[in-house]
Amino acid sequence: MANQQATIAVAAPRPLISRHTREILANYAYLLPAAICLGGTVLFPILKAMHMSLYHHVLIRPQDYRFIGLGNYVRMVQDPTFWLTLKNSFIWVFWSVSLQFFFGFLMALLLNGQFKGRAIFRTINLLPWIIPGVVVALIWEYIYQPNYGPLNDLLRRVGWMREPVAWLSDPGLAMPAVVLTNIWRGIPFFAIMILAGLQAIPDEIYEAATVDGAGVIQRFWSVTLPMLRPIIVVATATRIIWTFNYADLIFVMTSGGPANATQITSTYTLLQAYSDLDFGYAATLSVILLVIMLVFTALYLKLTKGVESVAG
Amino acid sequence: MKTRGLGDPLERFLGGPVLWTGLVLATLFALGPFFWVFLASVKTRVELYATPITYIPVHPTFQNYVDAWTSRLTPFSRFFANSLWVSSVTMVATIVISTLAGYALARFRFVGKNTLMLVFLATQMFPAVLLIAPLLSQWHALGLIDTYQALIYSNFSFTVPFTVWMLVGYFESIPRELEESAMIDGSGRFGALLRIIVPLAAPGIAATAIFAFVSSWSELLFAVTFTSQTEMRTLSAGLLYMVGQYEIQWGQLGAGVMISTIPVAILFTFLQKHLIRGLTAGALKG
Image 1 (tube, chains in turn orange, blue):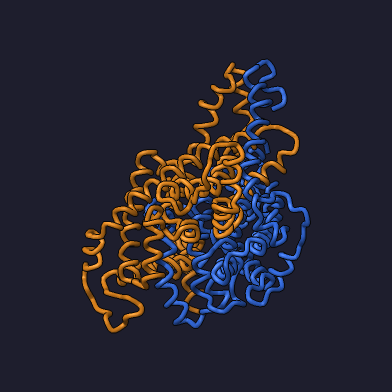
Image 2 (cartoon, one colour):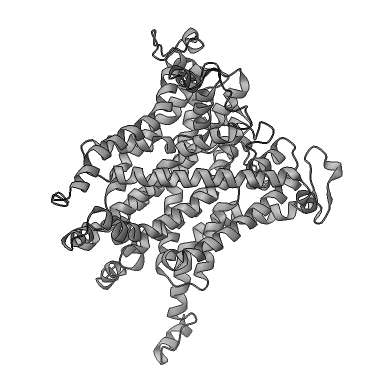
């Protein structure tokens, strides 16, 4: 204490930690809780999974547990089902996200309108997104049910169908059926995000554009879309990633069947871990999923120049 | 807003017939499947399996709800309480953690900030499917199997990255000048965050709160893996467990579906007001 007083009295030289450094440390403190959370529940498990992918690790055969280097990766490249799941994943993501975006955007524009009772309409139309995935899967399983499901019944009543169709057991229909379910679920996600973006656009800009003689379509292209771009970039990128990894719906509805017709890479990974208890191979598939998504994100952000507007 | 486009017939057409047709179609599509399951939940066993299909139950009954709520094998009252607790704690903790991190990333200069943002995005991509095996051994080692903590901590793995990523966007849309003037007026950095930024970003924070609650409420894979006792199951895990227990009983399942949906619907209606309000409208005018 005496020392310190003396120091201050003399000339108040630089403290041990400069003000600038202290500020930087204080700034990092804001990130600390998030860092601890993600370190414990994401980063450490990821590293562990990478480690697991180098081992032959089938849970029910602990005596076979051994280091096999890249053996799981070799197996994956030679696994025709893996390549099929990649193709299925592409179909699943492309149709799900593009149609969710299109209809979600339309719904956001509708819900942004001025009309009576719009709060009720908003709540109702956002409902499919707020209910649990397992519930969505069960609702649609019931709708698609061949004998006492309403879809077949309605199609027969309007005369578009003669024989009942087993939507989820037909290899050609199962994928469209699960994609339709996923679209139903995902439209509100885009609607809620784009609606938040629409609400953030100040009325003044629209008024100025109207004064300048811009019609409703012109205002949409020159005001609405550019102002929404950051939120569209974030929402779309996130949705593609989620859809690619989203296993719950297909897992509950078809378990990837019939004959792998709806098997996407994430459900394949899930089933490797659950049904086959092959954690080594499941970890390998997941590492590849991560690499694919990292490459995709880098490309996406570069193409849309989203890095400056979103992360800059 | 009201005076806009009075002389524009296209706008009147879009705001009139097109708007209402769109709303009706969207509502039918959104609500139809849900309504069907609600009807099933009040049907008797005979009506559930009748041919041709009975759409409107002649003898509506709430027996399915009573059965589901009080069932010993699949006690929905217990599942409901579990889901409520896990989702609420996850939501509150996520908001505190993500507001701090989102604000820091939106305002401060860090070495490698863009890399850090990419890490936040990347953490969302890592499939929950893969986290299950390493997390299972981790929770097992810590003695957290069949505890709420295991589910809440695991939920952070998907709620925190997404909410941080979203909040950065909201915070960046708020002009820096607002909090800088507050800091000149004597507020500290943290005070400015609480008094200026948080109220302005309330719609964004509300949206992320809804997200955290709803996604925790919906979480299935962690809930199934990290719990083994029936009394620790959440609603999602309980519904799946119910399907596995019997031949699918659509009446009780329908009741379970309604029970799972009502609380999130109420919360959502309540928070919607915050969502609708413009993020920056007040800031620019004030």
